[in-house]
Length: 319
Ligand code: UDP
Ligand code: MG
Image 1 (tube, rainbow, N blue to C red):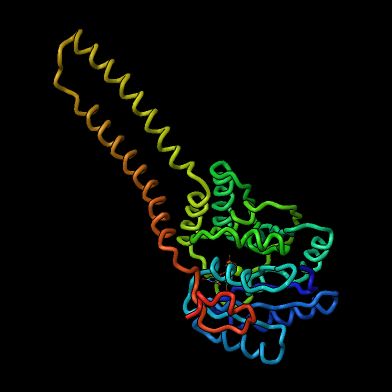
Image 2 (image 1 turned 30 degrees about the vertical axis):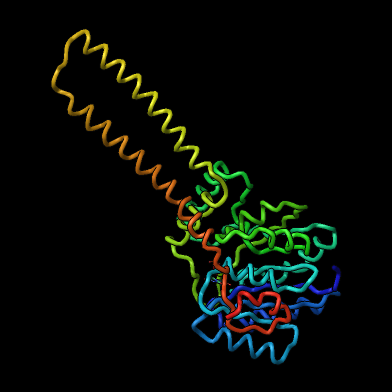
């Protein structure tokens, strides 16, 4: 489907000051392209004037579309809604906070015309706090051992997806969406472009350290069952170790008879095994929790209002 339209999906949560700024920046870029644009804002239950700003823009410019959720569902559902409603032959996902520079659009489109199905922007970590950069680099080192998709530091949702890639993503209908992983999982020809990190202009980031930790756990658990396997191996290892110890202790008893002192050995064994068991239960619990949410099959989001023509397609998600 080549319709000459490129859709820009912008998840926005309390970004009132940025809605217009990003619109201006995008329109300016698109003047130079032979493509038309469709700017698709997804208002993720903002409590400020974000929706109002979007409506104002859509009134003066028909290329502006908006979808507004009934409450805050999170960035992942917002991206999903954008991908489902985008009508362009290619879709660009970018943040509302101007941290994703619009001058990269021409590289995106150039990559798309070269035939790549995903053109991915990778940022460096300039301006991030050293603590945060350190945590993320550790995290990526760890996660790439733990999951089979190749996740790279500095690569996020900021990318262009061809229609083929979008349709592939929409086929994955899991409830708990870890986009970074899903983007890698679908594969297709990828091109990477590099850019210098930009700091946020208006508003504040919605990520706390706690969110980041949770996101990190999501990354590991939503992609494979390797943690379960680690528990299994740890279990086997400890079992073998205990068997050896029991044999050793038994032989000793046969030789020397039973000696009473043994507090240290007993308490170490109890604590160590208790710890391993709790940890394993925790890991299993994580997976069961996910199964619980997946079996509910709740919609990813609910739309309160929207002006997209594709709204009917998603009637079941509408209130
Ligand atoms: N966002 C969203 N829903 C949320 C949190 C964030 O749609 O619950 C949007 C936000 O408006 C922004 C983008 O996701 O456009 C990235 O958020 P943020 O800038 O807070 O994250 P960071 O750039 O620090 O990773
Ligand atoms: Mg940001």
